[in-house]
Image 1 (tube, protein in one colour):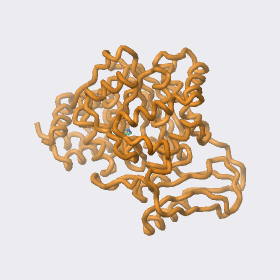
Image 2 (cartoon, protein in one colour):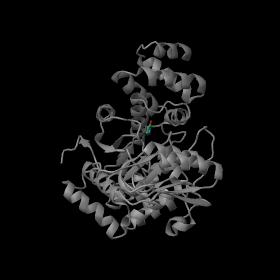
Image 3 (cartoon, helix red, strand yellow):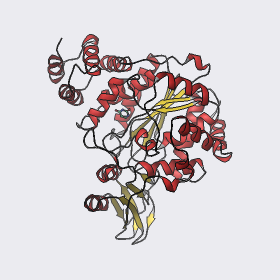
Length: 437
Ligand code: URA
């Protein structure tokens, strides 16, 4: 078999067989298939799609490119969550400690930034010393000891996805249902959790632009999860505007920690409380949404979620003083405010423009080996539906480079639309799939 023939087959809209997919993924994981062939193949998949059987085979091939964890020795149900990628989506950082503080172990393998969307691992690495490349033994022993793990891909866990994910980030091959579904679910299957909450984002700042596409992605992932014996819920969340206020690594980490201390933007708080509640229901810690929401709230009120987050950071080698004194986190040199040029109601805060601006400032990558600037980013000061006055702040840009700042100022000015008529705020969620309270 040759990788070239499989690229041609996909280019010509032919389905690939399981042995062909296994060959390609194993070859890529072992550096026998080069990046340039894998990029061409990923682009052919993006353009021509895959059928359900191919998506399942691709997921399983990537999950089995490393170890698939057996977490039965933990002796408790283990839950996991995953977002399909959004702007300002720092949910895992708040939700995982909340759920773990309720006594439900959370073992999660997260990603880095992808395209214009941020990644949990990049955000966590704003903390000096934080290790995101745990071995499987470390993963399991930490989960046993403190009930929470947030790690990135390693040579052990879904390494093929780790490589393909980084390649897709810089080759324009992110927004594809087969590639996203297999990427997310291979990590979830390899991570070994029994129950998984999927957060499928839809809108301008998501890889799925319409509710129909998001629903299709959610259904594919739920069915792959169920096929592999996992309990799965998928929520469909709007992502036309950024979630919360902060976009950028250290800024988002700070906002996530502030929520654990009881202070957060309303949309971010609502989102986190509900995701935590879905995880508690799926993990059989609560029988109803009402009970689960109360449990999640209690972890903030009694400080137990914050304590759990500190335990997590310390266990993975991070310097806890950076989350105790948030001012120590990396900061940008230049702060510039963009204000409204007229009064009215906010109709658009384009999440994609904001996400791309954050990447341009240095918070993400445009080449695989680009270094992240942890301190840069954007604070979004308005939400869709808000009434604003002329000169009211819309964005606060945190930059380290004048030239990049100027490019971004222009882009952000066009990211907001203010109209003369009142505008309805979007819902917090569009739908939930697979929830049986
Ligand atoms: N999250 C992932 O893990 N993979 C994707 O492709 C998109 C979001």
